[in-house]
Length: 139
Image (cartoon, rainbow, N blue to C red; front, top):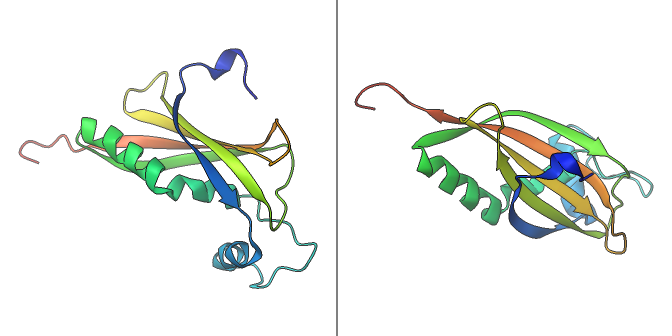
């Protein structure tokens, strides 16, 4: 990841993502998976997306919405996996955002997961966010 199409991103935070068994099991259970993952059970593919609920990320999104007196609406998401996450590890997630090139009412939020020892990104995920403005008079 990176390269020519990697311009225009504004950093929000470098966050820690812990894949401790109990937290991952609770996430998996919420998705309908068995409550207790087995020893070789992988971390659910979408688990890293949970960093988007971190207070630093939510505060930045709230600021962006407030600039336009808009509500945030999650439109879409996508994932790119280069390697699965392992249980009971610590990862770093670089979270950033950019405005949508074609639509002023949209932005893209991105997370990129790096391992403790690896310098390369293991996963990338994005959320497309619509800044929904109520354009009715008096609202």
